[in-house]
Image 1 (tube, rainbow, N blue to C red):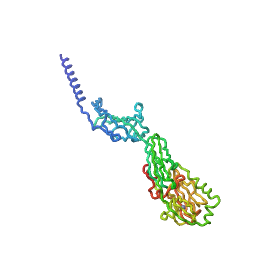
Image 2: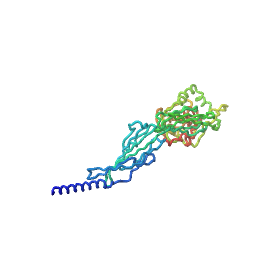
Image 3: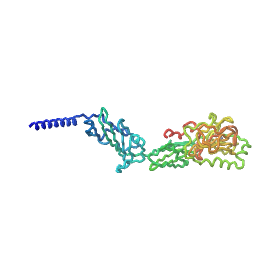
Image 4: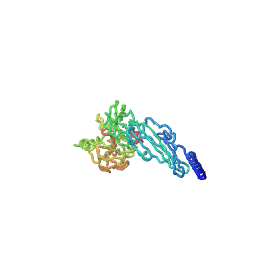
Length: 426
Ligand SMILES: [Zn+2]
C-alpha cells in the first residue's frame, strides 16, 4: 500500500515535470526581429521561406518555427548587364545563380556577396537567383535562416551611336559602340573612308569617319555591325565655303623645291605613303591643343591658292600659323612619331600618328626635336618653327588627316569636333 503511494507520487511528479517541459517547449516565445529584405534591381523582397531556431533547455533542444513567406519575385526582362543586389548586413549571405538555362541544375555561380559583385554576366537568357541569409543566435534574437528566389531574363543589346547625320566638307564624325555581351569587335563600312574601330574601354569602341575637304556634297551611308545588331546612318555632306589666296613665290624657291628633280617622289615616299597607315591604338585623349600660339592664321584650311598668276589653283590642306622662326612646336596630342626628317617640298617635317590613322603633320621646321618611333605626350616639344622647303617665310604649316582625307584642324583645336562627342562614355 505504501509502495503504491510512493509510486503514485513519482508518477505525479513525472507528469508535472513532463507537463512543465511541454509548457516550456510550446510557450517559450520565439525571439524574432524584422524580416530582412533583399533588393535586386530595385525590387525588394521579404523571404520566400524561413525558419526560426529557438534553443531550449540550455541548448539541448532546438525548436524550429517555419515562416510563412512571400511568393518568389519575377523581375521580367532586363536590358542591363547585371542586376544590382543589396542585402542587409549581420547575416551570412550565400547565393546560387542558375542560368542562362534554368533547366541546367548546375549553378552558373555561387558564393558570398563579394562573389556576386565580382561576377560578370556574359549571356542573355533566363536566370534564377537563390539567396540564403543565416543569422546566428544573439542575446536578443534566436538563430534564423531565410531564403529568397528571384527570376529574371537578361536581354542586353549592343549600343551603336552616331555623333551626327550632318557634316561639312573637312569635318569628322564619330561612332560609339558599347558591345553588350558581344565578344567580337564591331565593324564599320562607308564610302567616305576606311575607318577602324579603336577600343576605348573594357566594353567600348570608337571610330572616326573623316569627310574629306573635297568630298562631293551628297548623302553617304555609314554601316556599323556587331553580332546580330546593325545600324546605319545616312550622312548629309554639305559644302564648306573655302576662301581664295593669290600668292607670289620666288622662282628660285619653286626651282629648289616643287620643280627640283625627284621632289614629288621624295614627298610620296616620305609623306604620302604614310597617309593610309593606321595604328589600332587610341593614343590621343582629350582636346587637341594648338602646336604654337594660334592667334595668327596666315592661310586658312582648304583655301584655293593661286600662285604666281597660275590660273589653276592648288588647295591648302592645312593651316599656316604665322610665328617667328625658332618658336617651339608642341605635339597637338599624344601619339607616335612616324616620320621626322628632311623633305624637299615640305622641308624639315614631322608626322605623328594619334591612332586609327588620325595624324598631325608639321612642315617647314628649322629644327627637328624628335625622331621616328618616339612616343610623344600632348604638349611635348617636337621641333622649332622655320621656313624650310616650299615656303615664303617663317610659319608652321599644320595639317591633320585621317587616312588620306585632309580635315579641318580648327574644330579639333577649339573642342567643337564631333570626335569629342563620346569621349566621356568610355
Ligand atoms: Zn601651308
